[in-house]
Image (cartoon, rainbow, N blue to C red; front, top):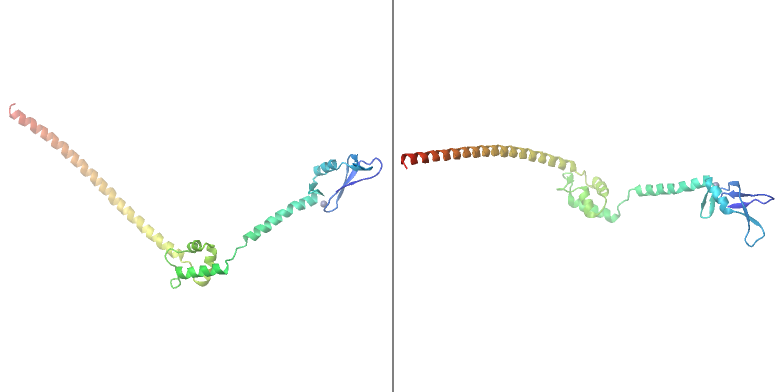
Length: 211
Ligand SMILES: [Zn+2]
């Protein structure tokens, strides 16, 4: 708030922090109060001076620089609290737990200690529209390891074998291509030779006939 300082020749006012009560005296103009007989400090002028020194006006209240800094920090603390609340891992409901366990019973081989063909925490989670982490926790607790590594290893081995097969077939294919090119070359040469012989034979026959 802004308080007038009364007294002869006083062209000053007191700016008071509405939060902590800190006061500061500033020089300012005075104007006659509307409809009244007294004089009042030019509040707009005082406010301009104070905001120039780091004070702030928030919802009509005057804040000193210290209180304004604290006010600005508080929303950050609130944001952090919200972030922490958001980071807390949500837990499945009873219904969701039962649904996960039901599907695990149908998808998990407890004797082998692994998922049945192709199933994973993620595939079950997708079917049930729940977090894969919830499936993983219940599976570990009630069923066993996901067995995903063994399956991946088996697939990797199969892939390696397939790649080796592909290389072998490609080598055979390349050799056959070379053989084919060789045969075509031979055929071409034989054809040309035949053509020459036929031409020579034709001329000879023509000459011998005396035509
Ligand atoms: Zn203050």
